[in-house]
Length: 590
Image (cartoon, rainbow, N blue to C red; front, side):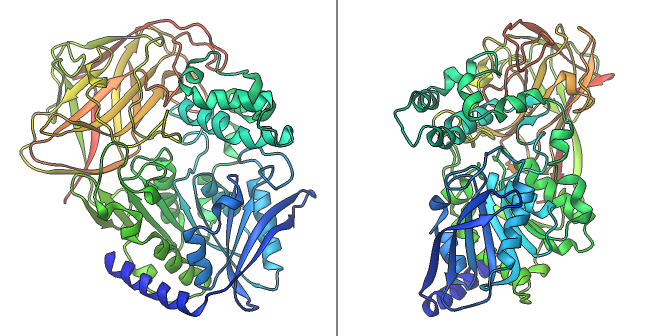
């Protein structure tokens, strides 16, 4: 990997020394099919072209994207680059409703591009997060000129994996992204750019006091968001996977997509599931799997470019975007698919994954890795697994008849989120690797831990917990977290997940549970790559809240969007021959 990183750096130096001038056209008007005008900045190499063209469609202000180092590098390598404000954002007209217009607007923008004399008719795209969504939605438009995309830290299914996960509302992300981010531009436009307007001041107050905002009930009906981000309540009104989400879902289109996709993601990213799913799903459905590649580092949402630390841990210089030469990866991808260069990209390993704990990159032919040994690691206790001081044990041995473990889930005092796949505020929702020991002192957190390992174990692949549990509530949540316990006691979180009981069987059709009935749940922890070193211990935490990463289940069975009453629930976890609660670990050869 470092070898071809060096070669691309050398090639870039040659390009830069021979191409010093860029033509920049600011605020170019691009008409959409309904007459709305979107605004874009165009960066073109010297000369008349035509050039292969790279498109960036962003809701985060086109001015902030250029001239970025990546943009300058791409343009200096002989590509035209256009950065466009999406509909309703900054200098573009129309109303911003997340996701809804991106497919048609992406198609219309590409159609405009290929009609320009400086464009050679071959289009690529790049960008992360929502700018990754605009790539996938443009791909769903099936415009034949879109040849290659590089989506970074983005989703496949915008229901399970963006707005919701496991049926729970991703409160920390959704509220901070909307109230402390997206709504500001909308409110400023509504008030003529007056930062002192009462609405702007209220939004700034929310930005500075997000902890209080997270705790406010009901979730639905904030007047300030109804004025400037009405889509927030719409998301709350659609907690199930219905037509709203299905029309935006990338997954059903996998067999029909021919665009070449280089997927970038992070083990601590909130949208990791989409990164992995888009790669594996497209490779499985594609007639040419070599058109789809994957790189996942030990990064949170911004970690590819921000570098270490990721939360409170450092993963070494080899984990950084500079080491892997992120810009060079983009150029090699575009050179192959937009210039038809035979540069060997197709012969490279499809997946490159950073193994935490080992501090190295590994390659693979697929996700999950070929030959993965999916091992059951069972929960055990003498009936007192509460907290890290309890008697919970994790082992390969199947359980015998054992006492169950119980705890009280009090939504007024939820288990706090400490790192993990949080996004996107470094004050209130900082993601990444953190020490979980304070969380593990709580009585409402069950802790199951192995003895110190006798040898290294590499866990790389999808993760899930199978839980047999009962609750006194008609609806509740169960959460799980995988932890690497270092010899010094540091408890490093790796990934986590949640299941809302009413969605245990289907994300389309919610179904209440019968109080006190033992039910089998499957909790998706998405995936990881970690070397559990000899002397370390593998740990699983089980609880019923992870707040504010997810909203609190009030335990009443009523609509989460409008609930204001919070009641306690007694939760019971079973581990016996007939109810073998466990985590399934994907063990691979190092």
